[in-house]
Every structure is written in structure tokens, then in C-alpha cells.
Image (cartoon, rainbow, N blue to C red; front, side, top):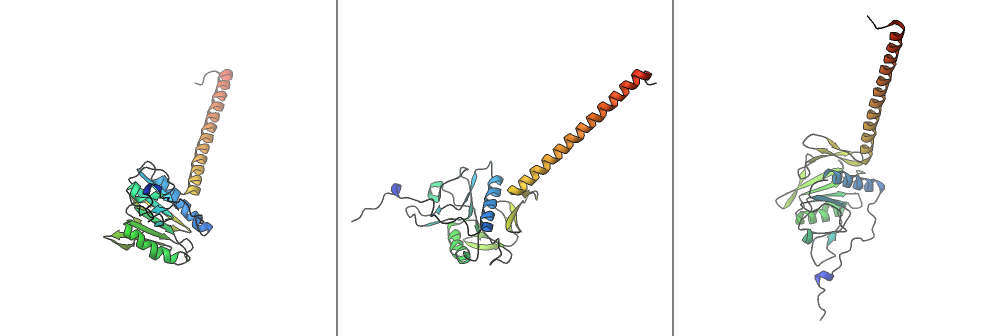
Length: 229
């Protein structure tokens, strides 16, 4: 009789060698979603992982799924090679799948049923090319043990409103309406702020030069004509 493999010796791979995403559009949507949410949750006891194995049954390494982006609260921040629910003792709160026509059936059926059974509170499908979701974005929220469609595109867990912006998801804070900027926008905003500061410094320098020129003119006037009456 073959003895069971001790749980400590079971290997849980961190990669399957498959590509991260089907196309550039899907990859860019995945990475920007990851980065925006990672920055948003900085300083909190939470982490955001992308395209990493989520293991949900201890001792069964083949029972796994690789969500495109998952948000987990009440754990130490930072990356992991993979995520084991029984070790971290937290189920992801929010999962995003950047979906396509090729992954349609898996995303809307297999993964949806799995996340529902794991009690992932929110599940979002984003179709950057609009291949099968007409409005490109569809969210589901757990009510009891069943997913119900989210009709206002607001994430109660993240406290963010989601908006389709071309081939990306735009994220807006519910408390003040402020948009969470993606990298390109962050760079543009920084450049705009830098340009404003440079212009302010140039204006201040011009004003200092004009003041110095006026003071020099007044000094020459006093030398020639004495003090002004």
C-alpha cells in the first residue's frame, strides 16, 4: 500500500508557464487595474495580487485558479508566489477577470461558480474589446450564497465606482469622486504640477528682477536729483 504524502511535502507550483494574458489590451488592463488598486490600498492591511495561483483546498495542489486580479483584506501587505487560503485564513474579497471571447465560458460559468462557493464577495468581469459583454463591465455581489448583478457599477468593498474608459477600467472614490490615476495619468499630473511650479518660480524671478531694476533706477535718480520730495 502506498502511504499518503505528508502535507508538508506537497508542492504547490507558482507558475504553469502559460502567458499572462491573451493580448496587449488584456495585459494592459490587468496591469493598470493591479497598479491602481495597489496604490489605493497602500498603508492598509491588505494586498493585491495578479495572475497568481489561488489554492483553495489543502493537500490538493491541482485545485487551483489564477484570478487576473484579486484583492485580499486583513492580511500582511506585499506579494506572494502563490496564495493558499488555509495559510492566510482569508478569502479574497474582490476578484477581477479581464475576459475575452476565448475565456467567456470559463469566466461566466466555471470561475463564477467557484468564486461564489468560496464566498468571494464581489466578482467583476471586464471585457476590454467588448467581445461578449456589450457594456464591457459586469459586476456581481454575493447576497447570501448567490451572486446578484451589480447595477450601479459601485464596489461596496473597495468603496469605488467603476467606469469603462476605452479599454481600461476607471476607478473613482465614492467619498469625494476623485479618480484614482493610472501610471500615464500620474505622470501627466506630475508634469502639470511641475510645469505650474516652474512657471510660478519664473514669474517670481521676473518680479524680483523688476523690483531690482526699479530699485537701481531709484538709486540713480537719488544720486542725480537727491531724495524724492
